[in-house]
Image (cartoon, rainbow, N blue to C red; front, side, top):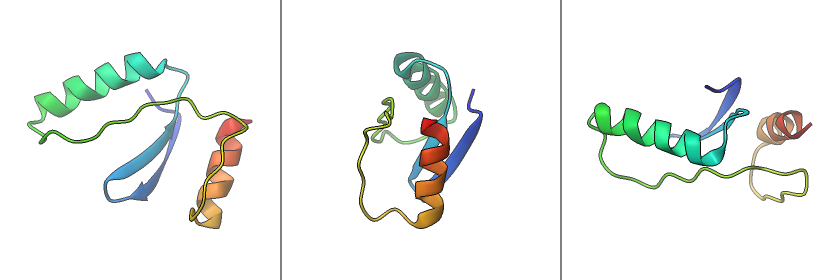
Length: 69
């Protein structure tokens, strides 16, 4: 499902995939529900080359730049 991922924080993971955001969201919701996970925030959105961020460590910036290529 994801060719690569980067664990941003204990509750946040970025992943690289060619799947559509809607498909990935639905897949993850079914998996979380099936695992009995508590409800939580799930944001699935494409990341473009024009994205901006602050506070991500250098290895995270490198991972994002590599995924956006």
